[in-house]
Amino acid sequence: MKTLSLSEFRAHTSEMVDLVQQGETVRILRHGKPVADLVPVAVDVSGRVPNWKRPIEPLRVTRGDGASGARRVLDVREQARY
Image (tube, rainbow, N blue to C red):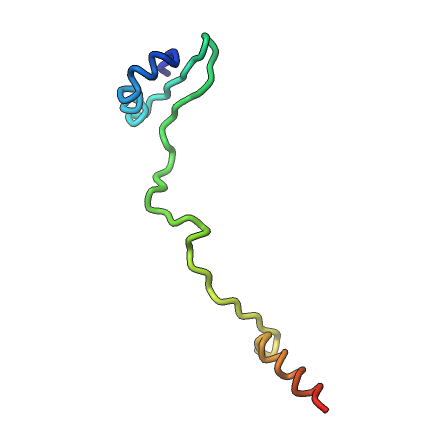
């Protein structure tokens, strides 16, 4: 693990990112105390689609007889007519 001050990190950011890309962890200190760890990404998520962007499949609820919820509502309406 590479440890350096915040001012050193600012001066050598690109080099530190290169180290992290190679699998190294970089710890950043402020006034001698650790404030951040820069670590490599464990899983490549670049090709994944976020949940909120995925298409939603139409919901179809059925009962034991196979009738959909919409069909049941229509049946109840038909039966309730005078």
